[in-house]
Length: 458
Image (cartoon, rainbow, N blue to C red):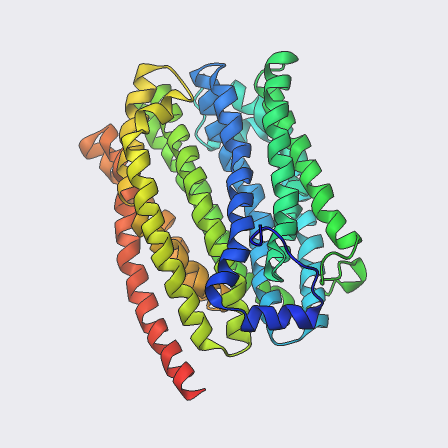
C-alpha cells in the first residue's frame, strides 16, 4: 500500500524526498499512480470504442475519426501541462517556489483560453472538420454527431491534463490519479446507460465522456482549492511574461509535436485506409485504441521518471539522473517484451471485444501483431524523449517526437500502400518505430556520456 499512499509533505520535505530517497523506490512510488491514471484515462476512448462498436462498423469508425479532435484538445492541455510541469519540477528542485506558482497559474488559464477558442472554431465548422479528418460520406454523419458534443467539453478536458501534470511534477501523482481515474470509471458506467438505456446512440457516448471529464476537472481543481498541493493556483499569479511562455513551450513543444503528430498520423491512417473500405478504417481505428491503451502504461511509467529527472537536473544530481533512466529503460523493455508477446498471441480475441465483422477482425489482428513485435523498441524511444524533455532539452525531445509520427510515419504510410496495398497501412507504424529507435540511440548515448562527465566533476 506504500506505493499508493502519499504523506502530506511541505515544500522542504518534498525537496528532500525528491533528491535523497533511493531512485528505484521513488520512481515506483511516483509511477504506480500515474500508470493507473494513464490506463484508466485511456479507457475514455477505449470504452467509447467498445460500446459504440455495438452500433455498427460506421459508428466505430466515426469514433476513430473524432479521436483526432480529442487529440487536439489533449495536445492543448498536455503541452501546457507537461511544459509547465517539467519547468515547475526544475524550479522546485532549485527552490524557486514563487516562480513555480507563476508558471503553473499562467499555464492553467492559458490552457482554458485556448481550448475555448478551439471549441468555438470546431462547433462553427464541424462538418468540414470531420471530412478533413478522413470521414467518408457514410461515416461523416456519425462523426458529426459525436464531435458536436465532445467539442463542448474541450475547456475542462484540456485544463484537467494541465492540472494532472503539475500535481505529478511536485511528486503528488496520487492526487492526479484520483481525479483522472474517477472520471474514467464514471465514463464506463454512463456509456451503456446513455447509448442503450436512453437510446441516444453515438451522441450518448460523447455526452458520457464530456460529463465524466467534467467530474475529473472538479476533483483535480479541488486539490488546489483545499491546499493539498504545494502549488498555489490564482489568477493573481498569472504573468504574461516571455520567460514563462518560453520555458513552457521549450519543454512543452515535444508534447505538442507528439500529440499533434498523433493527430496527423490518425488523419493519414484514415485517409490511406479509406481506399480499402470502411472496414479498414474501423480496424485501424481499433488497433490505434488498443496500442494507445498499452502505451499509456509506458507513458505513465515515464511520468514517474520525469519529476525525478527534473529535480535531479535542477539539483545537479546527475548520478541520480543516470541511475533513474537506466532503471526505467531496463524495467520497461522487459515488461513490454512480455506484454507484447501476450497481445501478439491474443490479437484475434482483442479484436473480438469490439466487433464481430470478420473483415475488421482480420485486418486488425494483423496490424496489432506487427506493432506488438516492436513494443520493446517503442519503450526505449518513449523514455529517451521524456528524459530530454524533463531536463529542459526541448530541441532533442522535439526531434525525437517529430520523428516517430512525422519524419518517418507519414512518408511511410503515404508510399507503402501504393506498392503493397493494405499491408502497407498495417506495417507503417512498426517501420517508423525501428527508424525512431536508431535515431534515439544517436541522441541518448552522447547525453549519457555528458551526464557521466558532469557527475564525475561534481
